[in-house]
Every structure is written in structure tokens, then in C-alpha cells.
Amino acid sequence: MKKQNGFTLIELVIVIIVLGILAATAVPKFINLQDDAKKSAMNGVEAAVHSAANIVYSKSAINGTEKTQAASNLPVVDDIEISYGFPVATATGIVNAVELSGFEGITISGKTIVFASVAEQANDDLCLLYTEASSETVGYKLEKGKLDQNKACTVGAW
Image 1 (cartoon, rainbow, N blue to C red):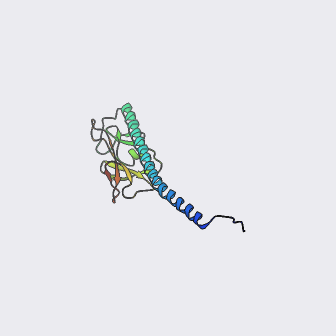
Image 2: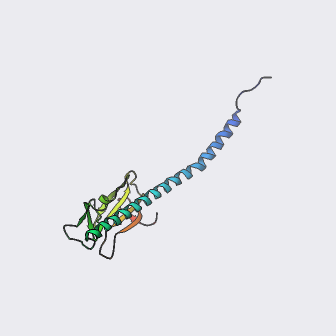
Image 3: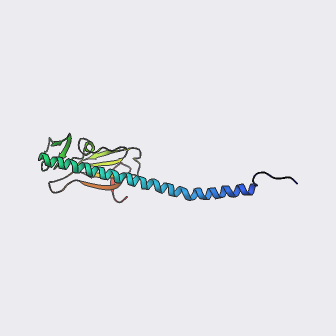
């Protein structure tokens, strides 16, 4: 009688089926981890924007410019344009105040700016909408949302 070496065809098929089942259950978990990572990154951006805006307001209060809002020449704190002490929603305002790696202010319209990932600016990608201060008593507003097809931030839950 001949001694056999190796595996039978049935054993190999069973191993391939088991690996396929394991892969099918692992892929959704991996995709979910990417969503969680994006949310965590945007939470970090939110915290950085809050911190930058509050630091600029503190410097503005020290300079005594926290209650000013000029029509043409905006007050400046450390090369950051301000309105009522907080950074304005421009590249020379909040974008200049906060240093974000991998994120940028992509849409500037009126008194708002949208922060989103540089790499992924697709529909339904996460974003933050920064609205500059509108008076001495109403400070800036930061809202979470998702990008639409026009790269505008539609405010709502992540």
C-alpha cells in the first residue's frame, strides 16, 4: 500500500470555504472602522477650531478689540482678521488661526466657511460649518454636517 502525502481535495475546499466566511465577516467590521476613524478625525478638527477661535478671542480681549467690527478694515490679532473678537470666516481669519493637517476650508460664502478632508471631498463626506460671530453677544457657531454634491455642508448629525 502506498503512503499518501498532502491534503485531499475535500479538505482544501473546506479550508477555502472557512476562509471565505471569515473574510465576509471581517470586511464590514473594517469598513465600520474607517467610518469611526473619519468621525474621530472630524471631532479633532472641531476641537482645534474651537481652541483656535477661543485663543484668538482671548488675545482680542487683551488688546481691547473684542467688541469691534469694522465695515471695511477688520481688526487684526496676530495676522488673523477678527469680528467681535472671533476670527472671521475667511482664509485670513479662522483658516489662518487653525493649523489642520489633511483638512482645509473649502467653501467660503458670506460669513461661513466649510472644513472638510483634503483627500475625500465626495458627496456625504463629513464636514464642519464655521459661522463667524454676528454681534457682541452672539459668538461664532460650529456645526457638524455632510457635504452635498455642490461641496456645501448640509448641517445634521454625523
